[in-house]
Image (cartoon, rainbow, N blue to C red; front, side, top):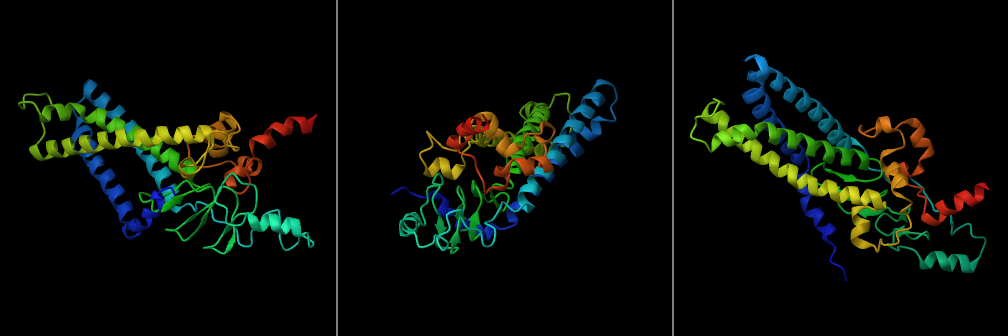
Length: 306
């Protein structure tokens, strides 16, 4: 029997909103090191140094705004729960006494296979659950297209906020990379004999050094998560599905373009913001987490249109 590492997320429940304060604290400390200590004062020097500082600060603040927007979108957006009274198309109670149909449905109750098109039932929630949904023991409910429960956002990552989560990773990687590059000269001065061109107090130099180390560490770690999730999006799988299921011939893998649009939408203008157009919400039911096109269904669509 496979060792389910996800059950240990329940031990992190006590952290609660402290994780949000930690994120804000890291951002605040980085802001102090980049803006207050280094590039803010450089604006008053004049010449090329001021122009470089202006470019760094403009890029830093733009990425920071996008990072915070994406982050709090993940935090406050409901990842998607099973609607009250939701039932699968195969309704056991209205099967008109068809014992074969009832037997088939009952045999598939509580089956954990997300790729199954049969009836799935959650014994903890005492309700049916749609395909690709999973019960989160931390949130205490079933989440639509659940990817994982993230302690950094104090929320589940599911159908409704997966795009925001990916954008949060994306902008975090860009922001931490920009910070690391911009603080690299100060980092080098920290190990020099103090004869460099950058003259700051020992306290400010230490703050810049710590900010550089923290941001380079986050950049490298987030890059790994970002690459992993890009691969998951390309195959139209989630973290849980990749861990629990055999996804080589995954039925929901309907091509990279369609897989991408089922997460980011079809409007290119909205790909880099944690929002969807009303048109995408209507024509892409997968964004709602209840209806997913399988490979067999997508292959028959052209035939049906002939």
